[in-house]
Length: 209
Image (cartoon, rainbow, N blue to C red):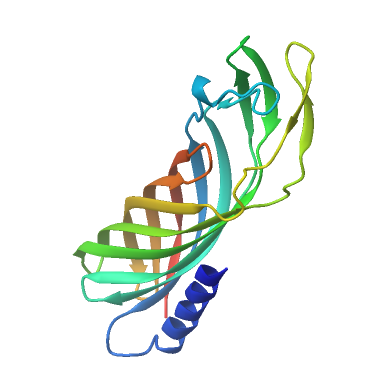
């Protein structure tokens, strides 16, 4: 919770100082796709505790917003996203039994730091990275029936505020002095007990303040 308070205070500070001479500020809105990679393995199997430790790769969608302030070649600011649930297949490596489940929705809050490789009147090319937390939503345990007919209870991720980090690159196409289209790709890591990694693609618009 301390990290969230710090990021909120940074956002307020940057917005209040957005007209300073240090650089340009923008508010950006985006939609995103999360391409989540397979997680877990046979070593994570615990009979009666973690019977289905292997999750297949799957895909979810979401949306979010952020605030960015440029300081010459560098930019920084907070970002928040809301991620919808999807469907994945869990596998029991002891007998190859499987069960299809709905994943949990989650929200993410990041502090974003980037470097402009190109920043012209028409185009900006940048690399960026960030860190923050991801928070699982709708965290009730759920009961599913496996392919072999066994009932199994699936619990939400074990850490409520796991550390998340990402690195990526992006493009801004400026279509007017006050508006640009943004495209970005990222690789993200979430520090669950069974770490989760994903490739994120998002697109949206940036409004210059």
